[in-house]
Image 1 (tube, rainbow, N blue to C red):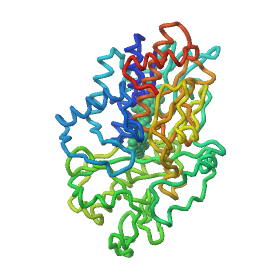
Image 2: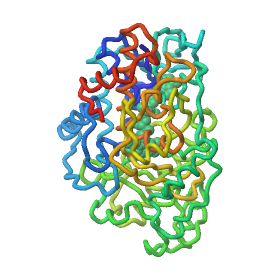
Image 3: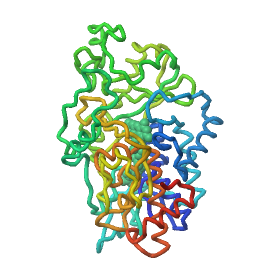
Image 4: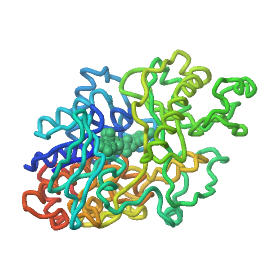
Length: 469
Ligand SMILES: Cc1cc2nc3c(=O)[nH]c(=O)nc-3n(C[C@H](O)[C@H](O)[C@H](O)COP(=O)(O)OP(=O)(O)OC[C@H]3O[C@@H](n4cnc5c(N)ncnc54)[C@H](O)[C@@H]3O)c2cc1C
């Protein structure tokens, strides 16, 4: 079994596969596991439990977060009384530093062979099956074969190289279906930003961002500003003075009427587990294709420059940030959306919104529909689910044209609308465990994954502590 990509989904997939008895290798292009959740500092974790009843999902997801909370208290100063999250549907902010360790420990303890600082650069398929992949590492270039491959690269890199069918960004008509459900915009309280103007809804992707940590924040004083679209007058800012700032006119800081020009149009941070520390999610670059080298470089330049500008803005003007300071920022570009495989089944936004749970579901999600506006005009499009959780059918994890190729995490088969919920970390871990379990069952039975009944996977997941609905 070979898993490409050591983000949260890839680690869960590799651990489940190794525990299921399959000889498993995990390839990761950087030296650290966790992907966006660690190197990307995305520490507010969503979909740890069902939406309304708040029932936990169990399995590797619970194992990771139980260990993480204990170790964070012990080694990362995670003692703040969190209370209710100021932000809907986000459960907790975890220490990326401790998460790195928990994931590494879990992978090595399960017997996963780690291939770090190793990148999948090509792949070959024969007779409708992936045969081998080409890896680039410190020693050079090598070819590796496996019976089953799991693409957990976030961007479906392995699927792309192997010739699997895939989609990039939004599909035609998918947004119309969303609006028919009555959902429109989220996070937009201000009248002037609530109006939806539409986007072409084909090949569009959510903007990229980079998260960063700040310390020395007066959390009580700052709390009432979280997630607000602000006018100059709200913060008592002299507009003409603002225009003299060194970053005025940069990407995201252009003229914006009475509203303060900010890359995401709002101020947004989450409270970390450490007193006085926040994780800021305010940078944004639109029109960046996370699978194209030149776009990734462009995106990195834009959002990295925005970080200092945003920190300056917060310290200068937002009550509670007077004594704040920048701690660190993401080491990888925060790509929310790029390629997704086309699976034997595709999860539709409408099914996620209505919380359908088909009998062949092997993972569940409960985060709202949250499409950060690809055009950058509004905050986000979407809204809350209409039930406790939706099911992800097994077919969403299996490539339609290459049945020995599975996907986990960000690149499973879901449409643009459903993906805006399935991309959330808790759900990525659940699809990872399901893909790893399916792969191990397929290897044990000498079959391709498409020949394994969903019921067998569900039973094995349940035996391994996952809650099956
Ligand atoms: C700015 C931002 C804010 C977000 N906010 C939240 C939030 O508040 N709550 C939440 O739960 N989620 C949030 N998300 C979403 C969530 O963080 C990600 O969707 C999730 O972590 C994806 O996990 P993954 O394992 O599928 O992919 P990734 O984390 O992208 O991991 C993929 C891994 O594959 C590796 N890789 C890629 N290509 C190759 C290759 N060719 N060869 C080898 N390795 C490769 C990468 O280095 C990486 O380690 C946010 C995302 C962003 C960008």
